[in-house]
Amino acid sequence: MSDNSINFDHLIEKMQKAQVTDADRPTILGGQFAIDRLEDFLKIWQNRWSQMPFRLWEHVSHIEFADAPGEPEFLQRAEIFGKGGHLSLRRDAGRWLWHYVGEKIDASMNDFGAKDFWAAHPGCTLRRYEESVILWGERKEGHKLWFDDRVAAARLDYPVNAHGRVYLHFWRYTENGQTAFVWYRELSNQPLQEH
Image 1 (cartoon, rainbow, N blue to C red):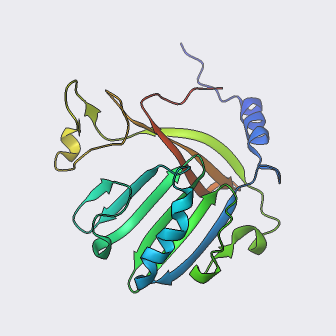
Image 2 (spheres, one colour):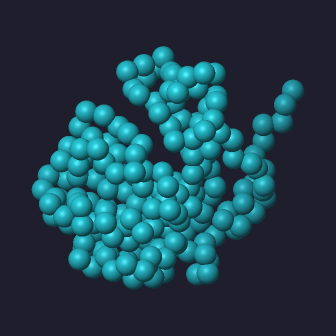
């Protein structure tokens, strides 16, 4: 018979360790800009892309990992991420909505409707948890793509030099037990190491 009881002391200790302090809280920005300013917006971020090497572009007809969107006029969403930060874009009719969670940034984002989360919510308390998920597909020896019967039509081409499975590692920030923000950190062929 196994002991499936919950260790509340362990959970409380984990929550206390997860509390974000002023010293380690991320920059959190968000805003919106006109649909025709996408190129200008991305140009500002390009100097940070070495710290955010994973760039996922979702077009009307396909999704791709690439340095830049192949067909910007058909772009619907983007996730640009790495250990330096996570920038998320979403097309909404005649505008782009964006948010960023990550390291402090130097570039002024005021031209793109930037609002600072911490200025608007100075008393907010966040907790940060390190997590990972397994992405779709498994790479077979000698093949370029990953395969998965459940998403057979999808072109699973992850920018990771790995065989087998691919893991997305991220930090999840919660407020009062609810997920508030997520910072995708990296793609890896290794599962998250428990501390």
